[in-house]
Image 1 (cartoon, helix red, strand yellow):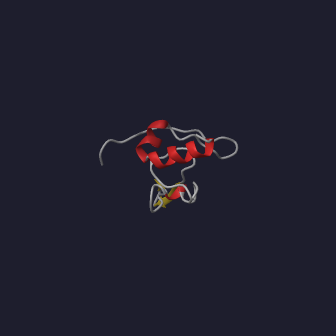
Image 2 (image 1 turned 120 degrees about the vertical axis):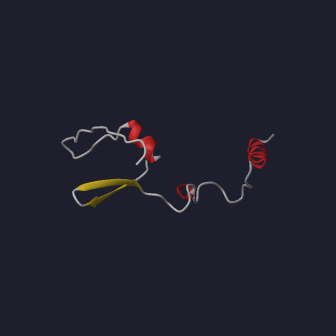
Image 3 (image 1 turned 90 degrees about the vertical axis):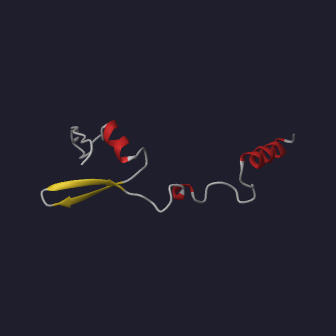
Length: 83
């Protein structure tokens, strides 16, 4: 294996932990992301849950009548403001 990260985290009375920053960065996860805990023998492996597309969580956001692209969005907002 490459560089190994060794960090501790305490479990709260509610069974929660704070994942150290270095571990979050190594896993590429942040607020709202999910982790999968898999038992492999006597060890537990933690992996990020990946969706098919990194943009899938944004699916449905926006207005279908607004064209994509910065210029189109700026023009749309200007029309909304009456400029």
